[in-house]
Image (cartoon, rainbow, N blue to C red; front, side, top):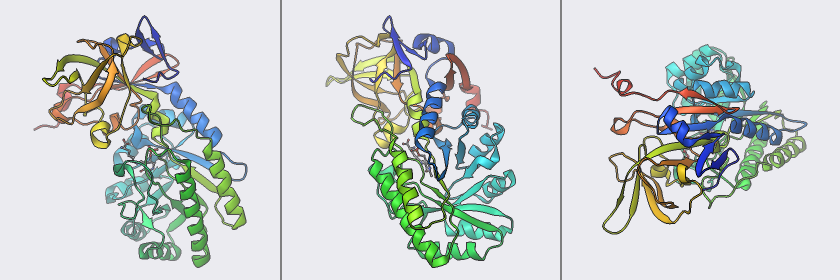
Amino acid sequence: MKFFNNMSIENHMLHLNGHSVKDLAESYGTPLYVLDTDYIKTKCNELKQHFKHPSLETEILYASKAFSSKAMYELVNELGLSLDVVSGGELYTAKASNFPMDRVYMHGNNKSFAEIQMALDSGVHRIIVDNLMELEYLQSLNRPVDILIRINPGIEAHTHEYIQTANDDSKFGISFDSYDLSSAIDICQSSDTVTLHGFHCHIGSQIHEASSFEKTASVMLDQIKLLEHKYSLNITELNLGGGFGVYYSKDQPITDYGFLTDLLNQCSAYISKQNLKIKKMMIEPGRLLVANAGSTIYQVGFTKTTASGKNYVFVDGGMTDNIRPALYQAEYEACIGNKADLDNDKLYTIAGKCCESGDILIKDILLPQADQEDYLVIASTGAYGYSMASHYNRLPKPAVIMIENGQPKVAIKRETYQDLIQYDL
Ligand code: LLP
């Protein structure tokens, strides 16, 4: 396993931000998500350094679907980022954490009328309109609405098909050369209440190739140029979405986000050459800020060797706290936290406790001999772990702790059995 800078080993014991995984497990229970706040801060500052430009205003939105909680929103606010929310629930959480609504962008391909009303009443900065019907509805409300339109730029990114979002038949956005887009622009142009400020796109997630983002930017700018000529629009904002790939396992590259500066240079050159009115460029990373900040500590229960010789380690969580291996064949690295520097000489499969054959967290990993009550630590679980967690088999959701300056703090409490039945009648 790759040991990140916040990890150290003393007497064979893995420490996360100076705390032994044994102490963390004993204090907070297992499974336990541990998030390194200082890592998030560092990543955010790095990103700010890369995503800035002398002649373009820039804004970084945290795509909060990656990990959403009041504590996370408070941190995002403190770091000065803006926020992408995609549902009434995320918006409600943002409000509950006192996040400034003038830095909130409301996404969603099927916002309910109630969610739209909540967003407008809350004073969110922009509604990102996904489709023509949504725009018609916004127009019918006859109240001021500031929007970006989500475009499907028709770019197939190199990533798992479930997390591609801009192939031709994607459910997200409107294609440039479509009747729906010209109708949408007509509505905006004749509207006294709906103001179109710009366009948004997002081509998918866990994308490592800078060239995919460069291609997206160039398609978006070319098309904006055509639209400006055709309709004399006033497009001042362009949001290129998120999707920046991170390290999970050794087959994956470590992306250098320095390419974002080149991307801005490329956009700025095009904007001045073509006299476009774009003033502000945005990105909205989720995973990049939190994935590598997180680890999950599990406790090993039983182990088993099948008749054909396959060695299983069973842990006290599974697909309920990390659905990504089952859903996207996502690969992770792990170690036995209390044997972190022992030889990895035995081949294991790490399985969860759910009643589902697909509940495998890691297929084929070399570890030291695993014993009952060992701590198994899976790295890089900070994104789309807790936020996609479920109650399958009525497993309570684990706690999340965030460690800042060496101080652990509970960000989300562990659920109890009582919590599980609280809505049962
Ligand atoms: N913006 C929009 C409009 C998005 O739909 C997403 C992710 C993001 C930004 C942030 O993408 P990120 O930077 O985190 O890759 N559950 C999947 C990922 C689904 C992403 C959905 N949209 C996973 O666990 O890999």
